[in-house]
Length: 334
Image (tube, rainbow, N blue to C red):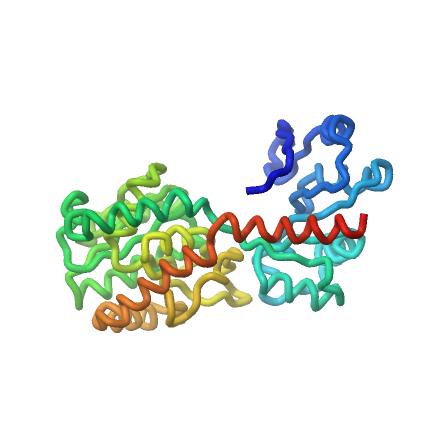
Protein backbone atom coordinates (compact mmCIF):
# COMPACT_ATOMS: atom_id res chain seq x y z
CA UNK A 1 0.00 0.00 0.00
CA UNK A 2 1.01 3.65 -0.21
CA UNK A 3 3.16 5.01 2.60
CA UNK A 4 1.83 8.53 2.33
CA UNK A 5 -0.27 10.45 4.89
CA UNK A 6 -3.90 11.02 4.01
CA UNK A 7 -6.40 13.58 5.22
CA UNK A 8 -10.14 12.82 5.32
CA UNK A 9 -12.54 15.69 4.66
CA UNK A 10 -16.30 15.99 4.82
CA UNK A 11 -18.14 16.61 1.57
CA UNK A 12 -20.83 19.22 0.95
CA UNK A 13 -23.38 18.27 -1.71
CA UNK A 14 -25.54 20.84 -3.46
CA UNK A 15 -29.34 20.26 -3.25
CA UNK A 16 -30.70 18.33 -6.24
CA UNK A 17 -27.19 18.25 -7.75
CA UNK A 18 -25.64 14.97 -6.64
CA UNK A 19 -22.68 15.42 -8.99
CA UNK A 20 -21.76 18.80 -7.52
CA UNK A 21 -19.64 18.41 -4.39
CA UNK A 22 -17.02 20.48 -2.60
CA UNK A 23 -14.72 20.10 0.40
CA UNK A 24 -12.68 22.51 2.50
CA UNK A 25 -9.34 21.93 0.79
CA UNK A 26 -7.65 24.90 2.50
CA UNK A 27 -7.45 23.11 5.84
CA UNK A 28 -5.19 20.22 4.70
CA UNK A 29 -3.19 22.51 2.40
CA UNK A 30 -2.34 24.82 5.31
CA UNK A 31 -1.67 21.98 7.76
CA UNK A 32 0.24 19.58 5.51
CA UNK A 33 1.85 21.97 3.00
CA UNK A 34 2.07 19.16 0.42
CA UNK A 35 4.56 19.08 -2.43
CA UNK A 36 2.21 16.91 -4.49
CA UNK A 37 -1.59 16.79 -4.55
CA UNK A 38 -3.60 14.04 -6.28
CA UNK A 39 -7.29 14.70 -6.80
CA UNK A 40 -10.22 13.01 -8.45
CA UNK A 41 -11.24 14.95 -11.52
CA UNK A 42 -14.70 15.44 -12.94
CA UNK A 43 -16.29 18.69 -14.00
CA UNK A 44 -18.74 18.61 -11.10
CA UNK A 45 -16.14 17.88 -8.43
CA UNK A 46 -15.64 21.45 -7.23
CA UNK A 47 -12.78 20.52 -4.88
CA UNK A 48 -10.69 19.80 -7.97
CA UNK A 49 -11.26 23.31 -9.28
CA UNK A 50 -10.37 24.82 -5.92
CA UNK A 51 -7.11 22.84 -5.91
CA UNK A 52 -6.50 23.70 -9.57
CA UNK A 53 -6.63 27.46 -8.93
CA UNK A 54 -4.77 27.27 -5.60
CA UNK A 55 -1.87 25.39 -7.22
CA UNK A 56 0.19 28.49 -8.05
CA UNK A 57 -0.38 30.00 -4.60
CA UNK A 58 0.72 26.91 -2.64
CA UNK A 59 3.28 25.80 -5.26
CA UNK A 60 2.48 22.09 -5.28
CA UNK A 61 2.54 19.66 -8.17
CA UNK A 62 -0.99 18.73 -9.16
CA UNK A 63 -2.04 15.32 -10.49
CA UNK A 64 -5.55 14.37 -11.60
CA UNK A 65 -7.04 10.89 -11.20
CA UNK A 66 -9.68 10.60 -13.89
CA UNK A 67 -11.57 8.50 -16.44
CA UNK A 68 -10.16 10.74 -19.18
CA UNK A 69 -13.46 10.99 -20.99
CA UNK A 70 -16.94 9.86 -20.00
CA UNK A 71 -17.87 6.24 -20.72
CA UNK A 72 -20.02 7.48 -23.60
CA UNK A 73 -17.43 9.78 -25.13
CA UNK A 74 -14.41 7.50 -25.07
CA UNK A 75 -15.95 5.28 -27.79
CA UNK A 76 -16.24 8.19 -30.21
CA UNK A 77 -14.91 11.41 -28.62
CA UNK A 78 -16.45 14.61 -29.93
CA UNK A 79 -14.99 18.01 -29.32
CA UNK A 80 -17.81 19.25 -27.15
CA UNK A 81 -17.30 22.12 -24.73
CA UNK A 82 -16.89 19.55 -21.97
CA UNK A 83 -14.16 17.71 -23.88
CA UNK A 84 -12.32 20.95 -24.67
CA UNK A 85 -12.33 21.88 -20.97
CA UNK A 86 -10.96 18.45 -20.04
CA UNK A 87 -8.15 18.63 -22.60
CA UNK A 88 -7.26 22.17 -21.53
CA UNK A 89 -6.94 21.00 -17.92
CA UNK A 90 -4.86 17.95 -18.82
CA UNK A 91 -2.35 20.20 -20.57
CA UNK A 92 -1.96 22.38 -17.49
CA UNK A 93 -1.63 19.53 -14.98
CA UNK A 94 1.68 18.04 -13.86
CA UNK A 95 0.39 14.50 -14.23
CA UNK A 96 -2.74 12.53 -15.11
CA UNK A 97 -3.63 9.07 -13.76
CA UNK A 98 -6.14 7.22 -15.93
CA UNK A 99 -8.31 4.19 -15.23
CA UNK A 100 -7.20 2.09 -18.20
CA UNK A 101 -4.53 1.76 -20.89
CA UNK A 102 -7.04 2.36 -23.65
CA UNK A 103 -8.06 5.64 -22.04
CA UNK A 104 -4.40 6.61 -21.77
CA UNK A 105 -3.96 5.97 -25.51
CA UNK A 106 -7.02 8.06 -26.27
CA UNK A 107 -6.00 11.02 -24.11
CA UNK A 108 -2.44 10.80 -25.48
CA UNK A 109 -3.81 10.96 -29.02
CA UNK A 110 -5.55 14.27 -28.33
CA UNK A 111 -2.94 15.62 -25.93
CA UNK A 112 0.09 14.78 -28.06
CA UNK A 113 2.14 13.97 -24.94
CA UNK A 114 2.02 10.79 -22.89
CA UNK A 115 5.06 11.39 -20.65
CA UNK A 116 2.85 12.66 -17.84
CA UNK A 117 0.08 10.10 -18.38
CA UNK A 118 -0.11 7.07 -16.08
CA UNK A 119 -2.46 4.14 -15.59
CA UNK A 120 -3.96 2.81 -12.37
CA UNK A 121 -6.42 0.18 -13.56
CA UNK A 122 -9.50 0.31 -11.40
CA UNK A 123 -10.18 -2.75 -9.26
CA UNK A 124 -11.63 -4.16 -6.04
CA UNK A 125 -9.87 -5.42 -2.92
CA UNK A 126 -9.08 -8.83 -4.38
CA UNK A 127 -7.01 -9.71 -1.30
CA UNK A 128 -10.32 -10.37 0.47
CA UNK A 129 -12.07 -12.18 -2.38
CA UNK A 130 -9.35 -14.52 -3.66
CA UNK A 131 -8.85 -16.25 -0.27
CA UNK A 132 -12.62 -16.85 -0.23
CA UNK A 133 -12.33 -18.58 -3.59
CA UNK A 134 -9.60 -20.88 -2.26
CA UNK A 135 -11.77 -21.67 0.77
CA UNK A 136 -14.72 -22.57 -1.46
CA UNK A 137 -12.43 -24.61 -3.71
CA UNK A 138 -11.54 -26.84 -0.75
CA UNK A 139 -15.23 -27.34 0.05
CA UNK A 140 -16.06 -28.10 -3.58
CA UNK A 141 -18.60 -26.70 -6.02
CA UNK A 142 -21.18 -29.44 -5.49
CA UNK A 143 -21.27 -28.91 -1.72
CA UNK A 144 -21.55 -25.15 -2.17
CA UNK A 145 -24.37 -25.68 -4.66
CA UNK A 146 -26.09 -27.94 -2.16
CA UNK A 147 -25.76 -25.26 0.54
CA UNK A 148 -27.36 -22.74 -1.82
CA UNK A 149 -30.06 -25.25 -2.80
CA UNK A 150 -29.14 -25.16 -6.47
CA UNK A 151 -31.22 -27.75 -8.32
CA UNK A 152 -30.57 -27.16 -12.01
CA UNK A 153 -27.56 -28.44 -13.94
CA UNK A 154 -26.35 -25.04 -15.21
CA UNK A 155 -26.40 -21.69 -13.45
CA UNK A 156 -26.07 -18.14 -14.76
CA UNK A 157 -25.66 -15.17 -12.45
CA UNK A 158 -26.17 -11.42 -12.65
CA UNK A 159 -24.97 -9.11 -9.86
CA UNK A 160 -25.43 -5.36 -10.10
CA UNK A 161 -27.78 -2.42 -10.14
CA UNK A 162 -31.07 -3.21 -11.84
CA UNK A 163 -31.19 -0.30 -14.28
CA UNK A 164 -32.14 -0.06 -17.96
CA UNK A 165 -28.52 0.40 -19.00
CA UNK A 166 -27.83 -3.16 -17.84
CA UNK A 167 -30.26 -4.42 -20.51
CA UNK A 168 -32.36 -6.45 -18.08
CA UNK A 169 -34.87 -6.98 -20.90
CA UNK A 170 -32.24 -8.67 -23.07
CA UNK A 171 -30.96 -10.70 -20.11
CA UNK A 172 -34.43 -12.15 -19.48
CA UNK A 173 -35.07 -12.85 -23.17
CA UNK A 174 -31.77 -14.72 -23.45
CA UNK A 175 -32.58 -16.77 -20.37
CA UNK A 176 -36.05 -17.61 -21.69
CA UNK A 177 -34.53 -18.92 -24.92
CA UNK A 178 -31.88 -20.95 -23.09
CA UNK A 179 -34.52 -22.61 -20.92
CA UNK A 180 -35.94 -24.33 -23.99
CA UNK A 181 -32.58 -26.09 -24.51
CA UNK A 182 -31.02 -26.51 -21.06
CA UNK A 183 -31.78 -27.38 -17.47
CA UNK A 184 -30.59 -23.93 -16.46
CA UNK A 185 -31.18 -21.29 -13.78
CA UNK A 186 -30.59 -17.54 -13.63
CA UNK A 187 -29.74 -15.94 -10.29
CA UNK A 188 -30.19 -12.17 -9.96
CA UNK A 189 -28.60 -10.25 -7.08
CA UNK A 190 -29.13 -6.50 -6.76
CA UNK A 191 -31.80 -3.86 -6.67
CA UNK A 192 -32.82 -0.76 -8.58
CA UNK A 193 -35.56 0.74 -10.77
CA UNK A 194 -35.95 -2.46 -12.83
CA UNK A 195 -36.52 -4.71 -9.83
CA UNK A 196 -40.25 -5.07 -10.53
CA UNK A 197 -39.46 -6.38 -14.02
CA UNK A 198 -37.40 -9.16 -12.42
CA UNK A 199 -40.09 -9.94 -9.85
CA UNK A 200 -42.80 -10.14 -12.52
CA UNK A 201 -40.73 -12.55 -14.60
CA UNK A 202 -40.07 -14.75 -11.58
CA UNK A 203 -43.74 -15.76 -11.85
CA UNK A 204 -43.41 -16.46 -15.58
CA UNK A 205 -40.01 -18.11 -15.85
CA UNK A 206 -39.23 -21.19 -13.79
CA UNK A 207 -35.68 -21.28 -12.40
CA UNK A 208 -35.39 -17.48 -12.35
CA UNK A 209 -34.33 -16.65 -8.80
CA UNK A 210 -34.26 -13.13 -7.40
CA UNK A 211 -32.16 -12.90 -4.22
CA UNK A 212 -32.43 -9.17 -3.57
CA UNK A 213 -29.47 -6.98 -2.67
CA UNK A 214 -26.69 -8.88 -0.88
CA UNK A 215 -23.72 -7.00 0.59
CA UNK A 216 -21.97 -9.90 2.31
CA UNK A 217 -18.95 -10.74 0.13
CA UNK A 218 -18.89 -14.31 1.43
CA UNK A 219 -22.49 -14.90 0.30
CA UNK A 220 -22.09 -13.26 -3.12
CA UNK A 221 -18.81 -15.13 -3.49
CA UNK A 222 -20.58 -18.44 -2.97
CA UNK A 223 -23.13 -17.61 -5.65
CA UNK A 224 -20.39 -16.62 -8.09
CA UNK A 225 -18.28 -19.69 -7.35
CA UNK A 226 -21.28 -21.99 -7.76
CA UNK A 227 -22.35 -20.40 -11.07
CA UNK A 228 -21.11 -21.36 -14.52
CA UNK A 229 -21.21 -17.91 -16.12
CA UNK A 230 -21.71 -14.28 -15.16
CA UNK A 231 -23.98 -12.51 -17.66
CA UNK A 232 -24.64 -8.81 -18.09
CA UNK A 233 -25.52 -7.71 -21.65
CA UNK A 234 -25.54 -4.03 -20.67
CA UNK A 235 -22.92 -1.67 -19.28
CA UNK A 236 -20.52 -3.36 -16.92
CA UNK A 237 -17.61 -2.37 -14.69
CA UNK A 238 -16.18 -3.79 -11.47
CA UNK A 239 -18.50 -6.79 -11.72
CA UNK A 240 -15.91 -8.23 -14.10
CA UNK A 241 -13.28 -8.24 -11.36
CA UNK A 242 -15.78 -9.63 -8.86
CA UNK A 243 -16.67 -12.54 -11.15
CA UNK A 244 -13.06 -13.28 -12.10
CA UNK A 245 -12.06 -13.57 -8.43
CA UNK A 246 -14.27 -16.67 -8.29
CA UNK A 247 -13.18 -18.11 -11.67
CA UNK A 248 -16.47 -17.19 -13.32
CA UNK A 249 -16.22 -16.15 -17.01
CA UNK A 250 -18.15 -13.02 -18.02
CA UNK A 251 -20.60 -12.65 -20.91
CA UNK A 252 -21.40 -9.14 -22.12
CA UNK A 253 -21.69 -7.10 -25.33
CA UNK A 254 -19.08 -4.84 -26.94
CA UNK A 255 -19.28 -1.09 -26.47
CA UNK A 256 -20.70 0.90 -29.39
CA UNK A 257 -21.68 4.56 -29.86
CA UNK A 258 -25.25 3.43 -29.09
CA UNK A 259 -24.20 1.53 -25.96
CA UNK A 260 -23.51 -0.26 -23.77
CA UNK A 261 -21.17 2.30 -22.22
CA UNK A 262 -18.80 0.17 -20.20
CA UNK A 263 -16.60 1.23 -17.34
CA UNK A 264 -12.81 1.04 -17.76
CA UNK A 265 -12.79 -2.44 -16.19
CA UNK A 266 -13.95 -3.87 -19.54
CA UNK A 267 -10.25 -3.85 -20.41
CA UNK A 268 -9.78 -6.92 -18.19
CA UNK A 269 -12.12 -8.98 -20.38
CA UNK A 270 -10.36 -10.76 -23.24
CA UNK A 271 -12.84 -12.17 -25.73
CA UNK A 272 -12.53 -15.93 -26.06
CA UNK A 273 -10.03 -16.18 -23.21
CA UNK A 274 -11.75 -15.22 -19.93
CA UNK A 275 -15.15 -14.21 -21.27
CA UNK A 276 -17.17 -13.43 -24.36
CA UNK A 277 -18.26 -10.26 -26.14
CA UNK A 278 -21.45 -11.08 -28.03
CA UNK A 279 -23.58 -9.09 -30.44
CA UNK A 280 -26.48 -7.52 -28.49
CA UNK A 281 -29.13 -9.95 -29.70
CA UNK A 282 -30.94 -12.87 -28.10
CA UNK A 283 -29.69 -15.22 -30.82
CA UNK A 284 -26.03 -14.22 -30.55
CA UNK A 285 -25.82 -14.35 -26.75
CA UNK A 286 -27.84 -17.54 -26.32
CA UNK A 287 -25.90 -19.34 -29.08
CA UNK A 288 -22.57 -18.33 -27.52
CA UNK A 289 -23.67 -19.54 -24.09
CA UNK A 290 -24.95 -22.84 -25.53
CA UNK A 291 -21.61 -23.47 -27.24
CA UNK A 292 -19.63 -22.62 -24.12
CA UNK A 293 -21.72 -24.73 -21.75
CA UNK A 294 -21.60 -27.58 -24.27
CA UNK A 295 -17.79 -27.61 -24.36
CA UNK A 296 -16.52 -28.49 -20.90
CA UNK A 297 -12.83 -28.17 -21.84
CA UNK A 298 -13.27 -24.64 -23.19
CA UNK A 299 -15.36 -23.64 -20.18
CA UNK A 300 -12.72 -24.95 -17.75
CA UNK A 301 -9.98 -23.13 -19.66
CA UNK A 302 -11.95 -19.89 -19.64
CA UNK A 303 -12.66 -20.21 -15.90
CA UNK A 304 -8.95 -20.69 -15.16
CA UNK A 305 -8.06 -17.70 -17.32
CA UNK A 306 -10.65 -15.56 -15.52
CA UNK A 307 -9.12 -16.39 -12.15
CA UNK A 308 -5.57 -15.85 -13.45
CA UNK A 309 -6.61 -12.39 -14.65
CA UNK A 310 -7.89 -11.56 -11.16
CA UNK A 311 -4.64 -12.72 -9.55
CA UNK A 312 -2.17 -11.18 -12.01
CA UNK A 313 -3.90 -8.02 -13.18
CA UNK A 314 -6.53 -6.95 -10.65
CA UNK A 315 -4.65 -6.49 -7.38
CA UNK A 316 -4.73 -3.20 -5.49
CA UNK A 317 -0.92 -3.34 -5.44
CA UNK A 318 -0.83 -3.18 -9.23
CA UNK A 319 -3.34 -0.33 -9.25
CA UNK A 320 -1.29 1.61 -6.71
CA UNK A 321 1.80 1.22 -8.89
CA UNK A 322 0.20 3.76 -11.23
CA UNK A 323 0.06 6.27 -8.38
CA UNK A 324 3.67 5.53 -7.40
CA UNK A 325 4.79 6.09 -11.00
CA UNK A 326 2.96 9.42 -11.20
CA UNK A 327 4.41 10.58 -7.87
CA UNK A 328 7.93 9.57 -8.92
CA UNK A 329 7.54 11.45 -12.20
CA UNK A 330 6.31 14.72 -10.70
CA UNK A 331 8.79 14.44 -7.81
CA UNK A 332 11.58 14.48 -10.36
CA UNK A 333 10.12 17.68 -11.77
CA UNK A 334 9.65 19.42 -8.41
